[in-house]
Image 1 (tube, helix red, strand yellow):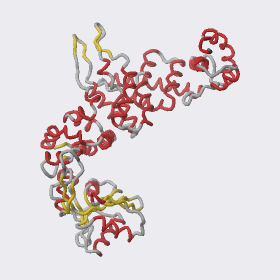
Image 2: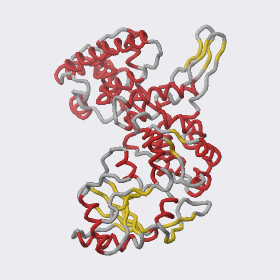
Image 3: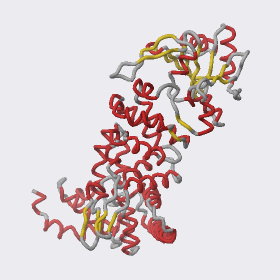
Length: 470
């Protein structure tokens, strides 16, 4: 069996290997993705010999000056155009119980393929002239790929005990490739799940975000839940599961609802932080759940409490805090458009949502549409139509009032100068009064109108808040 190899750098590197009498193979994801018909820009090359020495030869051949070397692991990375190529000598590995960093020793190609995480990655294609593009598949990885099965080359318990991150990688590949994890591998993950605690948070979060970035993230999210990994790496999401019933009242399983919302939004956007907002939009429901006689289950304030939970979640997952405010805003506001529908779409109500959402308004509406998970098609159509009415009203008000990137038309320093006031809390009260007047439609969003309004209300506000000037 052969694959098609057209990458000019890989073809040339094969010729260099022949000139130096070195056996060289493209391995792992390159071969897997080629079999799937995908374009590949990152390539791993295994040589029978010293990978770094061969990388130096290749670097010299292409006239490059930079080679990133990892001496401890015997690997080197070279960039050629848009192609990143990693070189390594065929090796075998062993691990200590308290670390996922391997002890590396020289091995054969067979050793190298057997140490890989899954059979679909334990594939190699020769780049030497004599057997160019011929695939070596000692663990039936091609068959598993066609059957959509994730399986380890060796005993899965040994595989996961050696490198626990592979448990998350199994879930990630299942989610990315829409595959099933075979029963022995699933059983090993369930048994070995606590080993994940030795893996750094950065690596765990990286795999989790790749799951969230897949076409249908619910595949991975459900596997994380079913194997018990979710309870360890993201307990706040695991706690969403469960249904309680009292009298004739019950509430839907919030975890399963969330999985549908995440899948829905993933059909509409690749924005990973918008997808994260979908995952976390109901994160506080377990903490706010109450049963009210004659009303049923309630989750009052879950949107606000959920937004407040996010800083700790971001810190624990070591996510960049630069994206925190965006996700907080979406979680905090995710019920507001529906309130507009049920309460009547007035200009004033729409202005306030536009003002609070700012530049995130389109993403907020995308989240709201994804949050419709009813199995009743008539109800779904009704909700969607209601959102279209709200969105049309938003467009109308936005074009008129320009509230998407709202800035107060009279700034604080101007208020200080005009009224000859010292910097104080009362300046904030005056600014808020102007903002409220604009949002209520009392005055237009214009400088002169705002200034005139300031002069009209200043005496009353100053009289009521004399103490703030002291």
